[in-house]
Image (cartoon, rainbow, N blue to C red; front, side):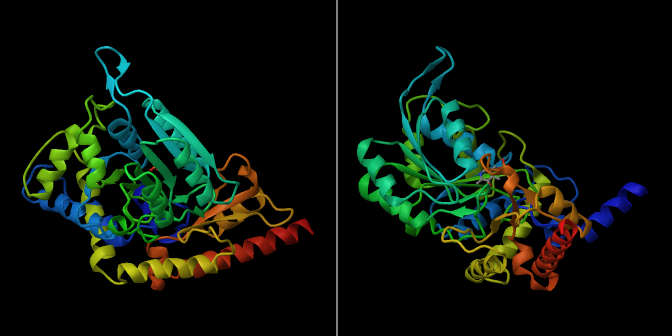
Length: 390
Ligand SMILES: *Cc1c(COP(=O)(O)O)cnc(C)c1O
């Protein structure tokens, strides 16, 4: 049958090195092909429970509460907006806790999106915008925290439009020093499992992520991990969360039940994806390399990809096109070598650069030779494109 043949050709040949979805290990793909199971069966419940336990390990937290909900990373913004920021009363069509303030540290495209999502739930959002290619300076964060009382401060750990890495530990320290009750929210969709995050030690309140980037699983699951402080803020709110599906009122006892090995239902989880996720997490948490070694390998990989920058993330790189070359010169040449990178995303420079993901098995499984394949294809494509212009 031609469709299955196409599938085989794709998995054997294409190298997907965009900043998510990333390459997925065969064992994870096989786990995804698990026979259909009931989401409340005795076989499935501990698989879900393992995912909850393992994601804590990835983030070095003992006590935080993970929420695993079908959706993409974007659903994490909705969870933060709906559960932590303002209350909406559907009966009176009114915001019950209006004027709650959020501060968004903006290091690229995804800061705008987070701000947009929080606005949707009625938050008053201020942004500190870093210059292109940089993270927000600590002094600016200090000034803002002293000027106003914020309920939450959000930052993009790795902004996927710029490849900028923010210093999570320092941001959390600064917030805690100046405004101890403010919740520190880390958008880790492009950083979890490729950058070190010490949830408990750094005193972070929320890490939100998704399966398809550093966690090496197909897309489809939103992962939000909440500190006790964040959960208390949620539990003490007077009003109903501004979302039905994203409400932790619905999900908290479901997560607790799965972890305790009991059946519970609010909305059907993506059963097969959970099997795949458990497989990938098991490799990350219990397999070789260790977590520490995994982070070191990502740092090493990021040095091989051409960019030298204080703010450079370790799981991806944003690269300006060489002189006189544009997307049309380079991306098709890479594609003809079966290497798939991503185009630009940041609106100011969209056509001037492209993005490379170097996360997960592409980095930690050296037998695959993905980095060598990528760098070779890059060099050949640039040389060929330049020759065609000469
Ligand atoms: C990819 C990404 C998102 C959005 O995740 P989706 O799964 O595409 O919804 C949010 N924030 C960051 C930093 C991302 O890289």
